[in-house]
Image 1 (cartoon, rainbow, N blue to C red):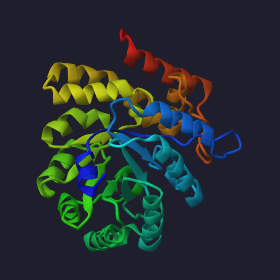
Image 2: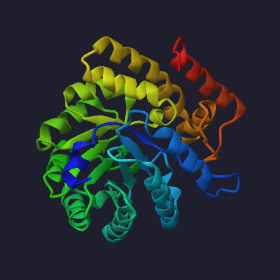
Image 3: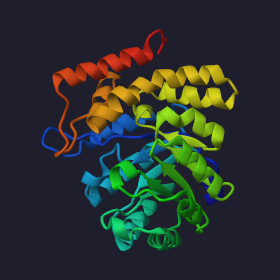
Image 4: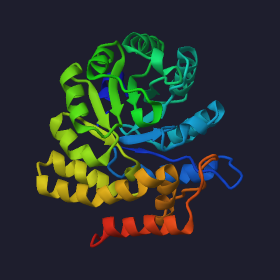
Length: 304
């Protein structure tokens, strides 16, 4: 796809695929391949490789790039292959971003650097994203997830970033609806805002967001896509019903148990979860029962 076509397709629901590990902590590339093959062609806008749900901070660069190689052979355009390439230094982020682009990434998701939090002001972030975006041949999206990074750029800062050449969008994962609305008022027209929280998805779409990257889309893509498509058709009641089904999956799986809970949900839905990579711990038997109950609540009465 051309750059313009890629940007136009940055919308809808994206699944941030997990990275399955074996008991010894090694990436199980076969299981990853199976998951991606089953995830595509579900009405999704695309998939995200090496996001937070994919345990990106625990992946070596060679592992990330092999995952990109595998996913590129499976993801068929116009579905978007979005790849997380953000590292702490601008230099290393640019190098990894170029490698991912060379291996077929359609767009690059770059997390806010966060180790030197006190120094990550508007000027530092603008220079970081300006340099990275200018140095790659693929569109760049800012990734803001303050609950993990401790970096919470203001709406004004994000508006400034939205006007940098080749910075085309934002994944905003705070789950703060008033904050998302303020961002949408500050960014340039046409800037693609994706949210990362199902609890605010419907209201965010109404406010001008173009979609979401949802961990729930890895194991119940039909519910996530159903919400989005109902919104597009103007079927507000149906969209709200889908959101009500999805809420327990956030409140009882993703929030309390994180990636480990999502991997159990994948297994219970017939996908490959695998183990989390240490220091993350697998769920206990009791916690697994909580995940199973949340899934039963979400899918009760549905034909799929």
